[in-house]
Image (cartoon, rainbow, N blue to C red; front, side, top):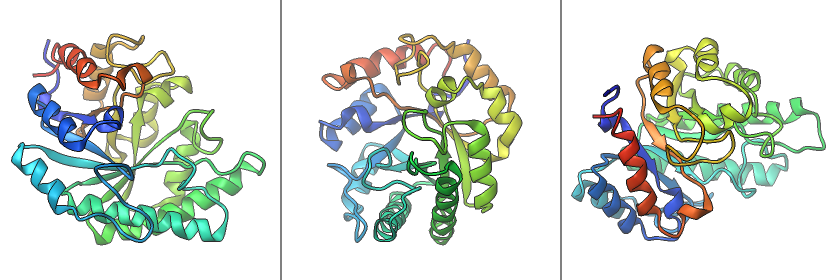
Length: 278
């Protein structure tokens, strides 16, 4: 049963972090993948608060292989730069890092920059961290608008964040930012850990505000290839379709077992996905 066009599949190169960017892109071509979500702030795609690398070599690599990068993801799950940070100097560095992420995304031809709630500090009131996250995303949304980019923010797991690990918190952040260049995205793992459903997210945000998805298997933790977790791929796709979802289905794979031979696992994953994608 074919439910979704295979051209809406995307792969994040996080599990290729020990390999060159060229190797990752060549693997995607061999699999017939047309879209990649590129991770910035590491080898192959460097940026920092002051500058970002020349995008032209990366653009050429994509064009030569017939690939597109609709979503760009600056590294946002390490302490260095997080959206709810408190210290004034670090807040400005964080703003500079993500502002350059937006500019690099635009230079690569992306439509979206992936983000999250941040995590604030665990020894302060939750509302303080949420307030700072809203303020940071408001500033970044202005930069995004100038560069024709939309920020798409995902929730995190409770071990990662106290300010964005539940649907109602993401709604509070979304309402607080209140900017047309700031949307949300579904991450099946964080959603599953919170005990939420895909339908819950569409009921709260509507299809017009859910612009992207990290669409991998889980149990409920983990970011697995399809078939190694407990989610039902067919049913999940059917719910997305029923709600009118129009974005990409990015595979965010982070199990350490994948890092030694990511292409082997991608082949298995694509084989499972092709049962419902054509």
